[in-house]
Length: 387
Image (tube, rainbow, N blue to C red; front, side, top):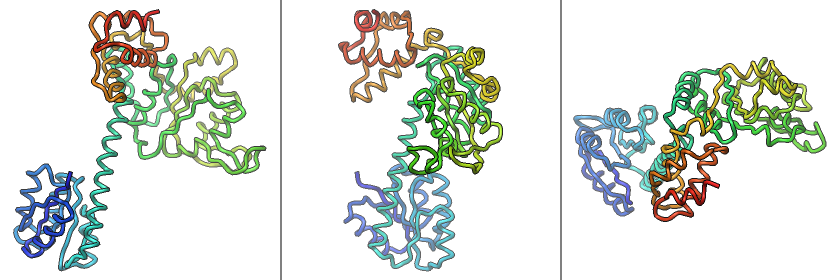
């Protein structure tokens, strides 16, 4: 689809020249002979993709138009053009939100390149917004049960602080979703969320993974490595399955939390880090403390805020809304129309024993979508879900 460009200039010859050139390049053109007319078109139109605006004009000059237009819609790029240009005017225009500044008579090649770059940047911004919405939706905590509502309320209170959070719950219950929501609503979103699955890293490598290492510190250390604590500096570190971390690594994590400093494996230099730590585990850490598998002092450091995620069996009232969400997202992945679950089939899903929690429910919904007919029936659930 051709982009729509609004040309705002009080010189008829300039408008005509620009209109002819840009129309030839495939753009749709709307013209305004002064700032006031341009503003009326801009605020009432929903199809303007870019503006070329003169600075010196009667009724409303270009800088006033620029200020109003960027306040109304900062996503539409505005390129200022002027025959009275100087470096101060150009800098002022860009400070006020202009995408770029071109002097009259415009260099047509430069102008076309500037327009193309502005449109590509705008397209990228739109794609980024769409992607962020998709990501946000994929990590949304779905459900209205009492336990889930309590978690949402806790996240809203705790997320803007730097308090450390320990998330507990069975595998597949949604601990990672809680961590991602804590990060998304925090004041640290301009810095990264770094994830470490402590159960997936061999005990002899966990220290190097977390704190990094210096070249030559052990046999395979052929170059320096930056650890997860340094990567997360200014942001958030999510230590998943922290109950599986070795006691040696626990001692170093404790020191990092106490002092805000780490030392790379094989190094001597202390490195200051500003990291918010969110931890998660499917184990009973106090029981692990009794069995000498987990440090009590580290447990107290991590559990400033405790969030226990309920099992799916404890929140079966959320199954219909969760199932609907999975029906939609899986249908989108398969580029199909979402199927419906018949009432008796939904009742059967709500009576099922969900040992695998949310993860199991998603797998079951995907299986039912693939194997059922136009709608998911009770017989489908009986055949493909209930043993």
